[in-house]
Length: 362
Ligand code: BGC
Image 1 (tube, rainbow, N blue to C red):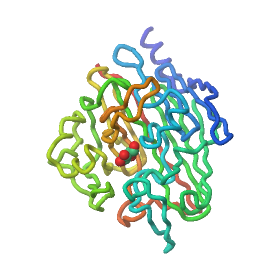
Image 2 (cartoon, protein in one colour; image 1 turned 30 degrees about the vertical axis):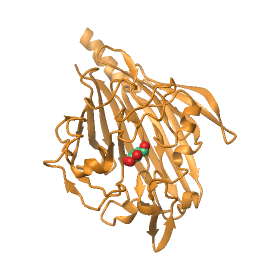
Image 3 (cartoon, protein in one colour; image 1 turned 90 degrees about the vertical axis):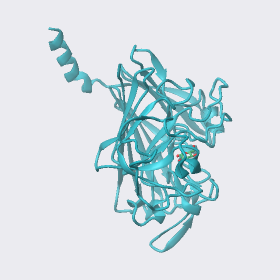
Image 4 (cartoon, helix red, strand yellow; image 1 turned 180 degrees about the vertical axis):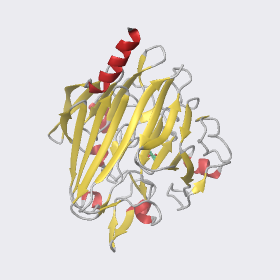
């Protein structure tokens, strides 16, 4: 009987819609900013239409105790004040770096304002993380829309971008679509910092990570890829088997020194929607499995968190307080002909999926 009931429950589970609850959070540029909480029996996620940020993800540990497993702030003011961590936001129009902010499409040269050591990072000085998106509640989630005008941060073409956050049982699905009216470049990703033991529980150095990548893209002194697709074998970048994040982070390795830890794009094996990464926290038993259609993932170990950004309760976010797994096209692709292209043309539609699935392992 028990088995029969369980089978019936599992069969109807996908049909159970997650509840969506909207609360007013404040105003920015005369536009309403709201917090949308999407809850399933297993997970509760809140997102805001300011910068399309993921504000919290409450996930159970091996004893069923919930904790917020992403770094963030309590209120809108926290997100407005923080202009350097990109905590939880959707970064765009071009997530990650473009060398000197300069690129060309069809012989036309564009200059995005440089905001990171002479390079353009996460879309320039006012990226998509600073914008108020419009929002529509959809079954089990919310769809956010941003119309980025022609010339926004010097990028060509009016870009219409949609991000759909939906929750199915213990998985958060993020679906990005975009169209343009002139050839442009696009790279959209979510910039959540995960700490599977719960935010403000210390560093993530003991949390384990597996990355489905035989190669990564080494960087230069300003964190721009050299163009090489280097093999990870025999280096601290080999995460094909699970390793604690901190195990080799202090190794004598030129690449780790340049970034003060991990801040590199990994070239994912395979194509289509497939495994990108698995993370596991031995203390709480929480696990995270990332699948994506993107060719790469930026594994960033929170090296530039330096205690200067405080959470809503005044506690500092210190170095290695969270790790990011930013599924993406490779950094500086507009200047690297051999990287998968990030050019979007008017006759095309960008479509990209990333799923963050939470679980427990005893
Ligand atoms: C980059 C880091 C940068 C961080 C900003 C990451 O995506 O790779 O270099 O410092 O974003 O918070």
